[in-house]
Image 1 (tube, helix red, strand yellow):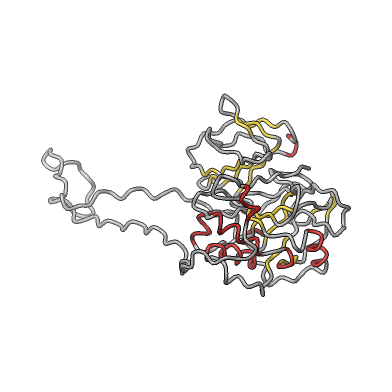
Image 2 (tube, helix red, strand yellow):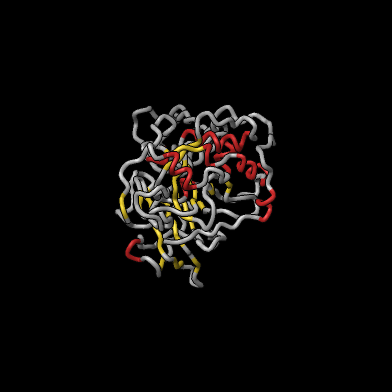
Length: 356
């Protein structure tokens, strides 16, 4: 359907040939600690002249009761509940490190490029696919589609004025509303002067359920998949673990797709050795990742346990791993991922290939 142009800083061309050990500090031993719920408050004894089972008859002797100076202030209301990104049984959240290897794995990897490096398609300088998180109070705005309106979810979407499209020609706009439990994504999105947005096409995802687009429908991604759950994100990397599959871009693909993808945008014949949309690859179990910094090991471990989906086509090589830009990433660290190449991956066995 389209070609994804990935713009990375020119320094990518000068990256080292091997993995480097950067930050040798130990990653967190456990996940983040949740905020404890406030303790309940003791109601105290009844006012003088009343019994515990007597009705509240109003102030004693016409005067309001004096406040108890020793009572703490009322506890603040709990924060809004935020849902997870799809249920635990979603393919995004399912481990595949024990699944069988596809019989055509070697041919797929050879076509994608056994010598192509794993490239971080995000950096600390703003390149990558940004996203915006909003609360349930974010106002809804109108969405107008000019490319594929029949394959798009109608608005309104809660896209704020300052939402940032990604800097590539794809101009993805991603908004996550964990309070209401929805994900909103646009392809080639642009803001209008009245605060509404225009896009080629877009999709709305209910985070509470494991659902997919109608068969042969696109989304904001060529594979008909959501983009956000497949991004490398700073908060997860820094927490010490990523517990979901990731997303990557290949140089070319075939005119077919495999579950959980619903759409193809390739040029190769269906059933050829070109990867179909939705193909899932994983880093081989025996690949040594000990020489990488601990944050890069978090990413590589996720690629061993959850793998990554073919989600779009690019203009050149394959194995472009998607992520959200963040100034806290070290560009030298993310470039060290190029020590991993296509031959370090294997294809997870997939089901039937559906033609577009």
